[in-house]
Every structure is written in structure tokens, then in C-alpha cells.
Image (cartoon, rainbow, N blue to C red):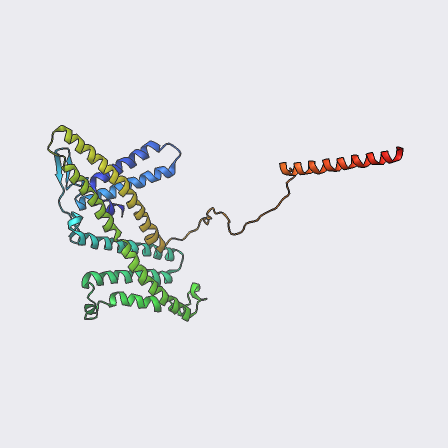
Length: 348
């Protein structure tokens, strides 16, 4: 998936070299996570090189060229079975669009097939055949219907009635699970027939919506591939404006191409990497992944309730001390006057 969005032989080679250097540099050190990341970068580079040959792209050019020497002209390559070519996606948008959709269909079917294997391994074979395999048939039938007859709904309803390709699996998804009660499947014995029918109906509707949204998500393969190639075309065109002016212009052109490629690889590479991860986690892993580790508990501040505690300070402030002194001085002065009056009355 990364290669389809980042298809360029030159950029792929750079990723392969970077990943390989990272693996060799840190293989004897403690940092397995970083080494695994370097392996991922290397594999992404391999995918980019393979798709780069299909796109006919080498650093934005349609030939493998270093300086003024041309080593190989990149010719269109046809994909077996599909009989289509992805050469120069900017001029071949529909072929790349169809291929992106087919890749999405294959990826989703692969996820459901892994789900089927998990059901089989868990001893839930009936559920695997009436759920995962039926969904594979439903998606495959819908793909054949669209690619063969397009969106001409009237042709769907004419002989040989191709609408049945996705319709029959959808009906089977509703009605097959209740047969588990008849066959006395152990993990369905606590379910009611009505509940299974209702669950199957909702699941069919949900599957239909998820198929449309999930397949649409793979159109990003086309969008990001076109964005990547368009950026390289722009950089190459700007570099060609400086040609034909001597060695100084050649050096400036070379520096501009190097920095332009670096910017595209960093920005576009990050964007493509994030989208590739998203397609794997949300469209692929959600079909079969079951968490069995420690629940993630994010750090948060409890700001729903606040407790205010009023506490009299043991240390008096300046104002309080002045007031106390004034009171004490007045009391002492009054006592002195009273004592003098008492003595005067006694001896005078």
C-alpha cells in the first residue's frame, strides 16, 4: 500500500538504503523497536521501487538518468490478468483508480479470510462459513457487478441477472445463522431464532455500508500517488528552467533537485506512511483483530469536582500582629492608670 502511494524507483532506493543502514548501525545495540522501524522503512522502499517500475517514475522522470547519462528508458508494463498499465498515472487516472479499488477489495477479503481462519482455529467453523466467507462472496460479487456492468441499474435486472451476485450472499448472511439452532451449534444455543435473524439483518446492512466506506477509503491510494507525482513534476519543471547557462546553472539545478526531492520525500513520505498505517489498522485489522493485552488507560486530570479547604494559618500576617500589639498596649495603659488612682486614694 505504501508503494502504491509512493511509487518512485529513486525514492524507493533511498528508503532501502536508509533502512539498511539503520539496521546495520544499530543491530548490536539495545533498540529493537528502532531496528524494527528500520526494517519497515526498508520494506516500504522495496514496495516503492516495484510500483515505481509500474508507474515509470525515477525521481520524477520517465528514465533512469544520472546527470546527463541515461541508463534505462522506463516503458509501460502491463499487469498480468488485469491487462492494464499504470504507466504515468497523471495521464492514466482511470486505470490507477480501478487498480486502487481492486487492491482495496483484495485487502478487505484478506482480512475476512484471516477472520475465517481464526473462527476455524477456535472451533467455530459454522460461524466462519456463515459469516466471514459469505462476506467475502458478497464483496467479490459486488465488485464483479460494478466492474462488468458499471452503474447501469437496468442492466443489473436483466438476464443473466447479475444483481444476484451480491444479493444472494446478503440474503444468506441473514438466514444461515438461524440454522445453527437446528444443527444445535453449542455457541449458538443461548441465542433465539428471532435474535439471530434480527442480528443477521442488521449485520447485512452494516456490512453493506462498511464495504462502500472501506472501499472508498482505498481511493486515497490514487489521490496520494497523483499528489506525489505532481510534486515531482513541478520540481523537475522548475529545475529545467535553469538549464543551458553553464556550469553554475547546472550546479544550482542539481542543488535545487536534491532539496526538492528531500522535501517531497519527507513531507509526502510522512503523509503516505500515516495513511498506510490507517488502512491497515482500520480497514484490515478490524476484520479479525482481538485485543488480549492490557487495557489502555490514558492519563487525565479529574476536573469534574474541586475541593476547597479553608484552614486558619498558624502564622499571623503583618496587619494582625499590629492590631494585637495595639490592643495589648491599650490594655496595659488602662491598667497602669487604674493602679495609680488606687494608690492615690489610699495614701492621700
